[in-house]
Image 1 (cartoon, rainbow, N blue to C red):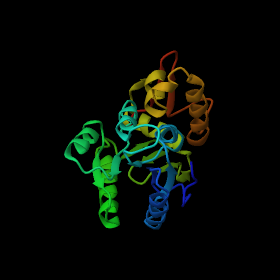
Image 2: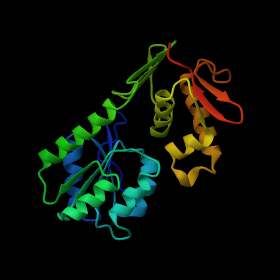
Image 3: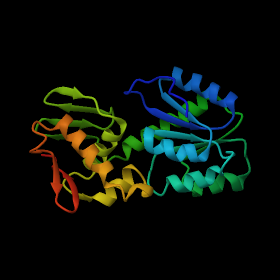
Amino acid sequence: MTTPGNVDKNLPRVLVVDDEKAIQRFLRNVLSQAEFAVHIVGTGKEALTAAVAIRPELIILDLGLPDMDGVEVLRRLREWTKVPVIVLSVRDREDDKIAALDSGADDYVTKPFGTGELLARMRAALRKTIQESPLPVYKVDGLEVDLEHRRVVVEGQEVQLTPTEYDLLRLLVTHAGKVLTHNQILRQIWGPAYVEQPHLLRVNISNLRRKIEPEPTRPRYLQTELGVGYRLKLKT
């Protein structure tokens, strides 16, 4: 997996899945200039791993990968994540487009493509994700989470979270006041392959509490439901 062209944590992360080196270089340049943090992989297996590790806000996916068909990658992603996926492929047959869209793709762009059109489709996909959020801004006591701008503020000070910590907090925010079980959280954040690894959740909950709680050992916002899961305090 290649490193991002722009590592600013506040930039939207895009995972490019394509094994063609020329396309990789081209998309890295175009997307970096458009102020995206770009991560690139060349196989379906790497894509599935990177989707967990990087927590991209959007995926650009080629269908003709060396180890598995892109449609299969889509199906596996949709088992646990709703991240927008734009297929970018030389396949222009209607049945290929239907198969990809039916498997969970949000959009389909054929090669060769115009960079302006691709960027516009990416912006549209990202806007749709924000608009579908039931709670764009969450405020309770001294904690504020702005989902549209990916900002977390505690007592007036902006807090920097890792991608995984942010996605964990975002999940809890969108279900504020409700208990999420350990398995539900593990499946949503790390995928079905990780439901038997609760230590991942415990470590990230602990790290998140250290960053957002005035007293991490006596949490005000992120509450534990013993033996069940976690609940974020309901917005007031």
